[in-house]
Image (cartoon, rainbow, N blue to C red):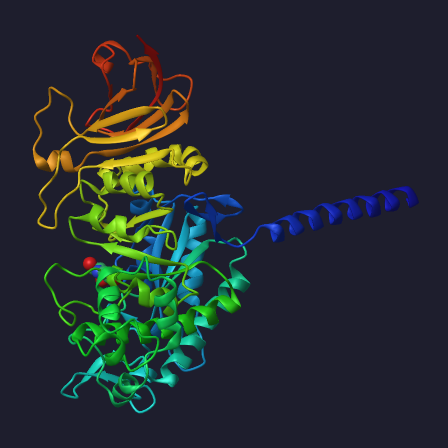
Length: 542
Ligand code: DGJ
C-alpha cells in the first residue's frame, strides 16, 4: 500500500512536471507579430513565418453565428487559411461600458473547429467613410459625439475626428476587445487587427465642423514638418512640390506650409485621421500588441480631393500617415481596379510591407494570378480577396492558386526578402487593357524571359490576364517555377543554356518533363489550364 502510494505520488509529480513544461512551452509561443527577413516583412505565427492566404467575408456575414456556421464548407473549398471578418462596435458594446462578446467568441470557436485563423476588422468609428457601425448610444448623442459637417454646415453620418469624447469611446471599446482577445485567445487564432475600415472623407475633402475649422487655423504640427525635412529625398512628389514651393517651412499654418488649396485641406484631414488612429492603435497595442494595419480605398484617375474617399492612407498621403500613425504596422491596399500591379508596387516600401486585405472579388478568374504576383514580386505576407463567401467551388482561380501556394509556402517563406523570388503577371491598365509583352528579369547568373503564352498559343486578353506565377532561385543553376500559363526561357552570357532536368511537383514522384513538355528542351512551360510547379536544373554548354 505504502509502495503504491509512493508510486502514485511519483507519477503525479512527473505528470505535474510534464504538464508544467507543456504549459510553459505554450506560454513561450509569442503572439503573432511581424519580423523582417531581408527586404521582406513576414507574419510570424506560433514562432514560424505564416503566408496568409485569406479571404474577406461580406460585411454582414459574421454578425450571425448561425449564418457564419453555414459558410464553412464554402470557406474550406476556397482553401483559405485565414478569414478576415468584422467585429462591429455596435454589436460588442450595445450599452456604454457593457460588452457582449458572444458573437466574437462563437466566431473564434467556429474558426478553430475548422483549423482557420482570423484577422479581425475593427468596424469602429469609421467604416468606408461613414460611422454606421457606432452604437446607437453614440449615434444619438450628437452633443457628446459631434458629427463632421459639410462646408455648408450640414451634419453627416460621419463622426468628426476632432472630438476627444469620440476617441475616448472608440478607444475604450477597442481596448476591451483586445483585453478579451488577450485573455481568451491563447491559441492565437486571431493574427492581426485592422483598425477601422477604409477611412476617408466624403462628400467633401474635409470636415468643416467648428472644431475642425479651429484646427485648420492652427499651426501645422512640428512632428509632420520635421518628418518631411528628415525624409525630403523620398517624399511623395505632389506633397514635396507643395511643401517646397512654400520654402519647405518647418512651421506656419497649414495654408502657409502647403498652400491654401484643396490638396492642403486633404493633408490636414489626413493628419487628424492618422492621429486618431494612432491613439487608438497605441492604446490597443498597450493591452495586447497584435500587428495592426489600416486599409485604404484607392482613388480613381482624374478625381480631385473630395470626389473620392479623401485623406485616407493613399500613396500621395503616405508621408502624412507614416509620421501621423507610427504605431500602425502596415498601410494595406484594397484593390478593386484592374491596374492591380500599378498600385501594389506603390505599397511595398522599405517602411511598408505589402498586404492586400481586399483584392477584387474572390471569384475573379485572375484572383489566383494576382496572389502569385504579389507574393512573388513584392514579398506580400498575405493576400485576401473580398467576398470570399461567393466562392462557388474549389475549381475557380483562387482556390487552385491557394492549393499550390500552400505547398510552396515553406520555400517562399525561406527565400522571401532574399532577392531570389520574382513574380509575374501581365499588367492591366485602369481601363483593363492587358500588356501581354514578355517580361525579362535577371536571376543570379541567368537572364529569364517569361511569356504569358507558349509560341503556338493564340490567346485572348481575357485569357492572358488569368496567367501568372513566380520563380524562386534555389541554387546557382536551380529554379522552382510555379503558377499557370507561363513559358520561361533561360539564357546566360557567353554560353548556351540547356535544361538538365525538369521535374513536376515538389516530391520525388513527379513526372520527368522532357520532349513535348519542354518543347524539346527549348523552354519551361507551365500549362494554362491548372496551377503547377516544376523544379528545374539548368546546365551551360558552348
Ligand atoms: C470596400 C470595403 O472596405 C468593404 O468593407 C466592402 O464594403 C467592399 N468595399 C464592397 O465592395
